[in-house]
Length: 345
Ligand code: NAP
Ligand code: F7E
Image (cartoon, rainbow, N blue to C red; front, side, top):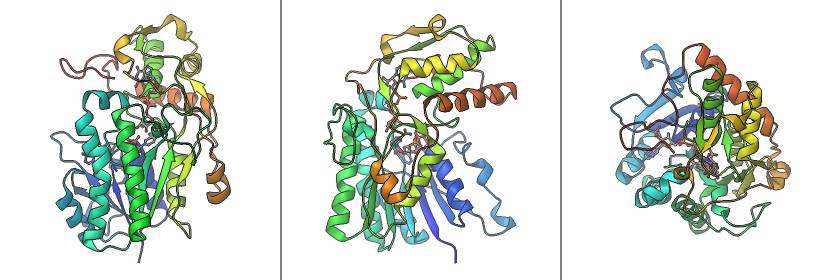
């Protein structure tokens, strides 16, 4: 019998890479997707097989992280060995516009899922997608022992998710872990996160499809890693003898400005000629610098980041170039409104 894994947020960047990894390792993966009027499964379509052609390795179920009764029925039906909770309203800037919704989905979503596991009486291991954003104003380097100082509704919601996960571990003996992941990116990153926004813009400017890109705070420092490597760390956290919490990071500090410099250099352009400032992208409270100390993950999980700053920028720009040349990337300018009145952060 192959192991069964349940992934919430399977249609997201990390969910899609994790589904690939688990299927490669012989799991049957069950993913929760939101019902939408348009298709939202583009990141996992390549993994999907028609169930009429045999036992599928990826099974998709409709579900909402705000709907506890649905989560309980899914748990009872699937009875997974491992649960990876990745679903979230994951955009920090958007969380200032929608703080209550973000708290509900990103914060309370975790306890709904934990209660569903208890309610359905399923014996499984649980992964919580915690975030370096929880450290917020705490100065780098940040490790598992650094106190949290959240600087956004998103970060506050993730801090709740972190503590409720620990509480279920301590209260009920659940094998529940927090992966405290620092920023990780890829060609599958949502196009409103800064690295992907910059990579798309650099390529489109190079190809003459736009002239400039508007950004906010260029001084912010982040520790950007490569998402396919980070899902390996998630899996390893659930294969240990004892549950624990781990920081996952590269340890390399890079400013937004430097990332833009690398991305534009990759296509032979000078970022200073194309990047414009727009105050709309500045957040009410900023997280100035996140740089992780992943010593524990290296020592206990045997995990180390291989891809760092400039190489990551190259991977993302190269992917954009080949996708755009292949006609696969939508032609819409990333800095244009998606729909009237909605800013793409
Ligand atoms: P992402 O690309 O934004 O994906 C988020 C996923 O959550 C999507 O599948 C989305 O579905 C789903 N989702 C959102 N609201 C939902 C709801 N109400 N009910 C059910 N599903 C819902 O995020 P990611 O970058 O893959 O990150 C995965 C997780 O790690 C998130 O929890 C994020 O907060 C956390 N994290 C990310 C990073 C990072 O740097 N990427 C770092 C630390 C922690 P749709 O496709 O339908 O929108
Ligand atoms: O911003 C600055 C912005 O939105 C990075 C999420 O995955 O990682 C992510 O959160 C920095 C910030 O990611 C623009 O102010 C400048 O300082 O790409 P981002 P994030 O906020 O760090 C953490 C770990 C998560 O957990 C989250 O889910 O870049 N910045 N100009 C900009 N950011 C955006 N989005 N757009 C700009 O135009």
